Length: 271
Image (tube, rainbow, N blue to C red; front, side, top):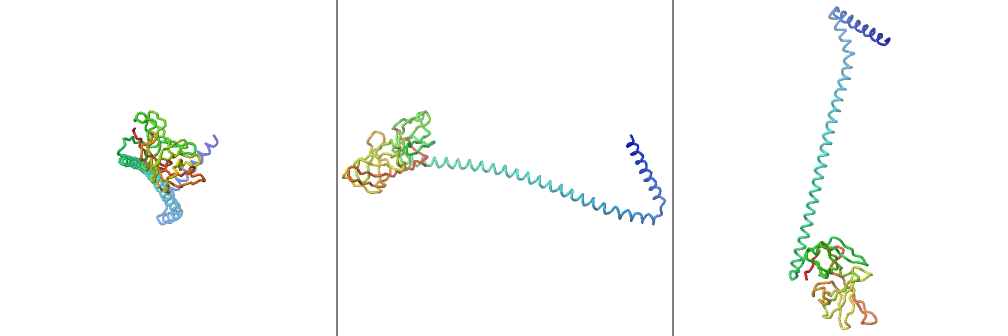
């Protein structure tokens, strides 16, 4: 209550002072009024200038925040555009990859036009010193059966060893359990090419006839003997000839024509 009374008294005093000033000013002569105005202006003008500068600063800050909001909106728009372009780029890369695959299929089918083939591509691979298998995306539903030959653009890949409805497993020729009857271009006699445990990048040709003259770089082809591989499919080339004290035991290493770690597109020969 005391605070309210004090406030009321103070308000009354201020009001009275203002009224007295108004009466005084109304009775002051013009020249004296001008002097008073000058005094008042000298006091008020700097204060007005301060408030004016403050107003411009506030307006400037407002413009700054407006520009900041515009920049944020433009940044978001650029992010969305960039994301859209990245999506379109991935789609183009996918289309390009599909076109490459189709072109490889066309090249293969033209190269092996004499064969009735089923196109496929590799969906999984396990190429190691202990096992060398590929999984392809065709199976029983596509007419694939076990023991069918699988070839690539460069030459022989292997043969089908198991089949599901939609996939098939291929044992490649560098697998240690694989055996292929072969002919070397400089001799008409057959030799046996097998995978090795020591190196999954080569084949070992053994049972070489004593009178056969092998030359490094000779081409090696399937002989057609054995009932799995047709005759005349390129296997690789003679890389090195190893001569032992017993000529019967000599052998050669064969570099496969196909790189099994990268091959993607293959054909299954429909027997």
